[in-house]
Image 1 (cartoon, rainbow, N blue to C red):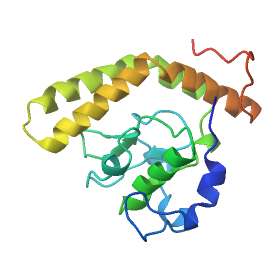
Image 2: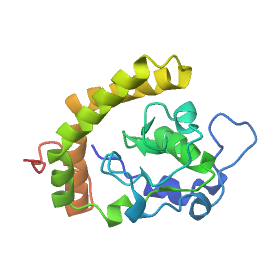
Image 3: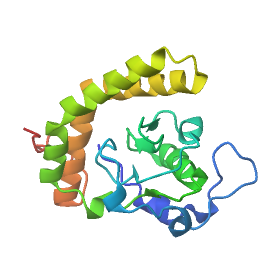
Length: 190
């Protein structure tokens, strides 16, 4: 079932920063300032995305089940959308940690079912990028590359098992503005 993070995001100003005692997330419009036109193509469809984030590689430290780094500039990419309040909070912490404030949570304003289908149709390109990056980085000797390779393998596993259903649920959400109930037909991705 699709999780709508918008209520958590809207009220996030008083939430604790994950992993940093005493720190609170500020107003989301202070750090969720990414622009759709700068969104990296490797972000999975959904409300959250990275758009020319920094290359400090902090996102995986707080949200390893959701963030990987691309290999061109080292920007952060959302590979799994949050599915509950705790996961939303860690993705928000990753966004809060980005000094460029280049994450966003306005994907619902831009994605359509057709755009999701187009993105899904290009998954071979995504899988090739994952495989090529894993090959290049697995022998690098750098601990951070090895960690990101683990994340990329998790991304690959998610594409193979689970992402299609999540995208179908998200497509239903975009079309109906509600989560599907048990037994309701979800849109196909083609």
